[in-house]
Amino acid sequence: ISLFGLVLIGSLVYHNVKGGILIGITILTTIFWFLDSSFPSKILEFPKLSTSVSDFVDLSYVLDPVHLKVMLPAIASFVFIGIFDVSGVMFGLSALGDLMSPDGTIPGSLWGFLAAAAGTILASLTGCTPIIVTVECAAGIKEGGRTGLTAVVVGVLFIVSIFLAPLLGSVPKGATAPVLMLVGSMMMSESKNINWDDMASAIPAFLTVVMMPLTYSITNGIVFGLISAFCFYFTTGKFFGDLRRWIRKTEEREAGGDEESQGLMPMKKSNSFVGENGTVVRRPSFLLSEGDLEKIDMQEREQRQNFGGGDKSSGGGYGS
Image 1 (cartoon, one colour):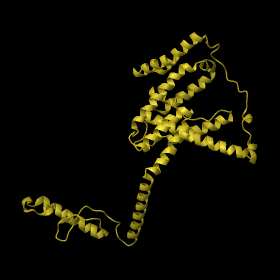
Image 2 (image 1 turned 180 degrees about the vertical axis):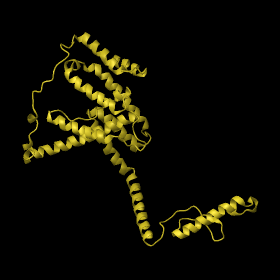
Image 3 (image 1 turned 135 degrees about the vertical axis):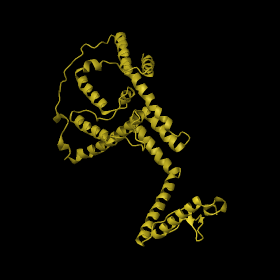
Image 4 (image 1 turned 90 degrees about the vertical axis):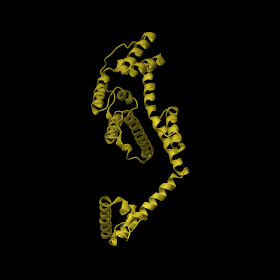
């Protein structure tokens, strides 16, 4: 039934049917309910808070060294997992929605991290898990969601869903599984940008993609990819090439500072230089003062004027 649902939802999305994913989930849920006779007994239910904040927050643990040794590694683990999860999913979703800047940055990514952090703090006060950006958001992007208004509407619907918990909780996993497979196919579309001929890029990308489903963790996949990319950075010699370029740039900056302190212009690389006889000759870099550069520029302008107004058959100017 789930495979049938995958074909159904995929076909609806292919034909750009608005709400095709929701239509598919509704049809599959109805089929499952009829086959299993598992219709929900009630639809609405008011939430009940059986616990209080004091049941999950005890500041005395912070002052206890024994508990602190247990807390700090756990907190550090959650922080790194949250960073990897949020950054990885936001990158993929931004690429899917064509929201990424030309330089590879994600506009508004800071607010995404702040929202996840604030949500995690509030969730911890009620005993809930950390709040992250979920990959299922790709379904909303595929339906056309692009602006912050989409997130606001989803947030309002989440509040409404609290009262519809019995109905939504009875939706079988087989009805939502096709959506996850559809989301996976959407995210895989970005793999076309990977240079599969370059092993230093292909292997880390492959490990990232494969280890996520095998370990049931986005974070594990990103860690495997980063570690392998770090190793290839050294084994391929890229590190030493970057190190040489960094040393060269440092030396050039230091040399430029010494030249400026002596009243000279920094090293200027020029493809042309006006010789003593007025002809333009090719030479390497020259260390010139500002006055010398102005004289050369004036002579070059005169050469261009003579070349443009003179007799081309005489062989003067640049032709000489």
